[in-house]
Image 1 (cartoon, rainbow, N blue to C red):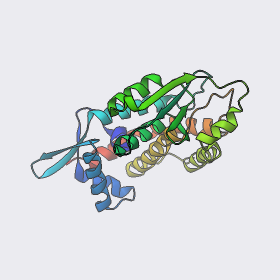
Image 2 (spheres, rainbow, N blue to C red; image 1 turned 45 degrees about the vertical axis):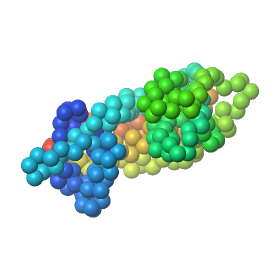
Image 3 (cartoon, rainbow, N blue to C red; image 1 turned 180 degrees about the horizontal axis):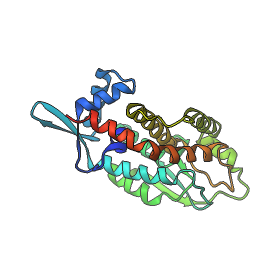
Image 4 (cartoon, rainbow, N blue to C red; image 1 turned 60 degrees about the horizontal axis):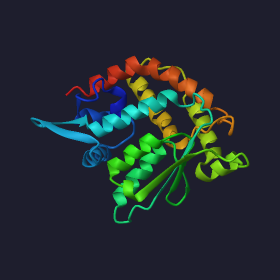
Length: 254
């Protein structure tokens, strides 16, 4: 999904040859079998649409995937830009165990929205996520099994200690440092090398959307090297784009 979201000019209508995708994934270290299984799995989950043209199979993004990627783009653009203290969101749910798929999808989307688990079935976000959560609960048809509250931390609360129950803040700081150390390298001129570097760059950076709660910095200090990682991403990603896009287009041309 990261691959297609990064290189499709027309997310809502463009199709890509499956053989080209398999070849690109091979360049990133995946076997042909693993690549084809991954594509088939995404299609079964409704994240990719499979289209046959003669003897060739192509894939296109579904509306659901386009919407998720668009939301991710917005989050990526604002990640690490600084958040001021405001209302927090608390969600709890009692989704029946026989609706395991809905529970799993809820957890994935909550993490994507910056929620952390305080305890079983109770989730916390350091932002007002009321509208996004309401839409998510409607989409999963579990509104009757969940509740949402908005509020602020009490003045007497040690927010740093409390937040550490929902998010691994020390590990987050290590991940930002590792990201900054990994991608501090010259921009390659070779299109294949630029493609590999840019794809790993955005894929690694996207992980922070589910890891970084972006806590208000007046309450909890930001990870020490987050600003460095943010600058690095916004410098490298557009710099690598022309060569990486050229390689993607050449390989996926059926």
